[in-house]
Picture (cartoon, helix red, strand yellow):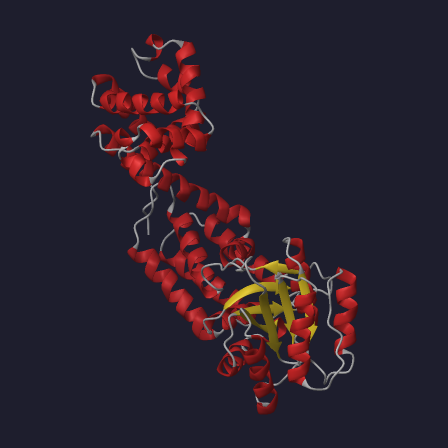
Amino acid sequence: MFEELTEKLKGSIDKLKNRSISDKEALQEFIKEVQRALLMADVNVEKVLELSKNIEKQTLKTSVMPGLTRKEQIIKIFYDELTNVLGGEAVSLEVDSEKITTFLLVGIQGAGKTSSCAKLAYYLKKKGYKPGLLSTDIYRPGAQNQLKQLSDKISVPFFEVKSNSIPDITKNGIQWLKEQKVNTIVVDTAGRHKEEKNLLEEMKMISDIIKPDLTFLVIDGTIGQLAKAQSEAFHRSTQIGGLIITKLDGAAKGGGSLAAASVTGAKIYFLTSGENVERLEFYNPSKFTGQLLGMGDIQIVLDKIKEVENIKTMKERLNKMSKGKFTLMDLMDQVDSIQKMGSLNKILDLIPGIGSKVPKDAIKDAEKKAKKWRFIIYSMTDNEKINPEIIKGTRLRRISKGSGVEDRDVKDLIKQFQSAKKLMKSNQGRKIMKMMRSQSKDLEGDNSL
């Protein structure tokens, strides 16, 4: 999927990385390479120009993040902007376990609705739900039989039509599937053109009867930029909650479909390619963009950014601890941060005059206790985490029971917490803070350009 686009985008990144100087000329050349790649994938010209301007604007006005080079910063900005073009934030498929969840699939004839119905049902089945299938398409020869064969293949209930009345088929089908004890229903509809008013009205009528929890518009990925107009036309007839983009195996215009569809405001939920019922992929724009750009290259940049953010968070916690203004959750987070730096024994050895004075057995005991502390703290209310001095009597017993420890373990944690607050204000505490700050020292970025 999108091999040609991936190859061109990765080539653009490689050329940028191989430039000896990351100056304005390098930036402009990179943007031109990206423009050519996206336009060849049929992405709308206006969206390409908008993306290009944003990359240039962000690069010139944003200082380089600590730990990154200027080239890596450009790659990260491009990654963010392309992710926005391709959908932005990922969505989640909500299924209410307390009731039957119904999905309605609509779209142009030939877009792949019927096979998408079976793929969605199979996806739900793999997730542990019990789906059922219903087809309201009485126009296309073989439509009912196609979905029946697919339902047999994936072993899910399918309502067999015995009427030519769409309202009857819809009502009876939903009722029959409920009797089969399904907890999710996937409804197929007849293919229609966005200009066919009668069929669009029928689609609205079906929607009014079943009141779907989510209506998917199925879009053929080969239509490119036309996906935008198609999405908007269907959205006017019924509330489109999500999109399924089909036929993306080698589609030259697939990039255009993704970008155009996202403009409508309806989020892309799934991508499909091929006829196999397993070929339904939940769409995550950020992950998809990473795959397009070559996850190895972008992951290095993302890991560096995460490291910088962790350091920033750690410094904020250290400042709170040095002032004695930290909670039990801050203590637990700090313990986790220390453990990521290595064993407590190795860290104390780095502090002159302290490591040698702490018994090894005490260090092992502290690391063992830290594992219990996590369960204890997570059994507390927010108020108890902030004000542990209120943990007495029934509160203490509730927490120990909820975390599977003894009462004395909870008391020990509170005692250790109070001792830690005092330690942070002592000379030894200041030495520990100094060492930890040196461990989290920011790296200087490449600020050329």
